[in-house]
Image (cartoon, rainbow, N blue to C red):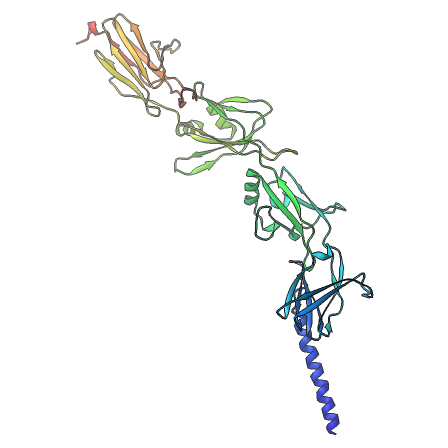
Length: 415
């Protein structure tokens, strides 16, 4: 009877021991093979073999030619000071491997290490701006597309680990394309080793298009084959973005109102009076990315404010001042007529009510006008184009003054 009880308890003990060891094995990270006190598991994310339960300060790894484990291929013996170790599996050279680990009198059963994933190739679609459409990852051997959720990337100059490609935002991709980037990619499915690393260069965007302003003729200069839009401030102080427009196969010079109407702005004169900003870029082609964006600030147009009296009978009077550029036109009554002096910009004046005939007053110059008694004149300021050589900042001209100025010959003063 006692013998039966003893056998029964021994049987229960063996069952519990086996159950406990089985649970411990299930918690291993990848492949777990257990034999008594020694266990080994493959961590594919690090491509290492993790070993626990080492006895007597050493362990041995045997590799085999095939799954039959009959012929030993190579033997590696390691001395350690702990009961655990981590061994790099590079000696398998990425091929499928067959391994047993032993320590003391214990040995694991056969561990099958999966081969690295096949080589991949990464293609980039220049016309796409989203991550999921820009990158196409394929099996290099078959050309079959691979799911991006299993693709990982990092900068070639980064010391940190890989990140999932799907974690890259479209904004991040756009920044990489602005400057260019050197990236490394691998493909790795769960529970399997990664592919060999492939290096890819994301080319930098080409330079943005060259835009210009013709201040003298109040026009915007656009090159051929560009997309553009305008940002302006409305009456409430809010920034408004216009519709996108496309220029054709030839360069253009568009008058300000015509230019703003091309992006569907319904109140161009108001926008012109406040100034606006143009953004333009060259669209992507099969061979080139979309270009960088060029920004062009278009200043507000000036307006002439009458800063002197409407009648000049004697002396020198600054008759008009531009509210934007600060340019001034001074008129001086003389015995023989009157003189105009321009400062800060060139002006035009007309004594013709139909405004068909105009005289010119160049910036920094004085022009003398002879008359018999009294003249009335209208004025407008001429635009000035920028000059890098003379460090001159350009500005637009103005509309014709609202009302004329009457000037008298000084020797025939009216009382």
